[in-house]
Image 1 (cartoon, rainbow, N blue to C red):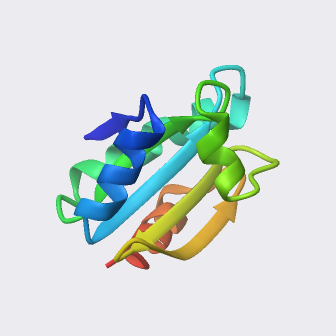
Image 2 (tube, rainbow, N blue to C red):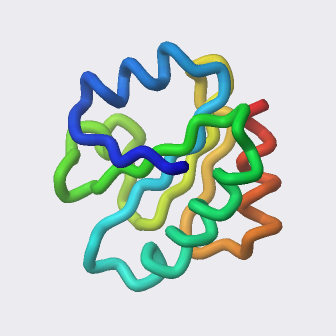
Length: 104
């Protein structure tokens, strides 16, 4: 299950309280984001040890600016609250899984 982030406080709490976090930065108008979203949802179902979240960059520009996000989708894996790996653009399911694994 992927959680939609509604505030910076909620985002900060999730990063602080989960060992492994995978973040999908997206926008509703972004074509590649619409393609990668269902794949992120799919891998979230087989990785219960990772917290999957989505951040709408239009609704949460403060969070996006923390990472200098200029292009979307941007996908970031966090391990113990620290950025482990980041990727930009559409990715196939296997590549998304490899990225998510870096958060473990």
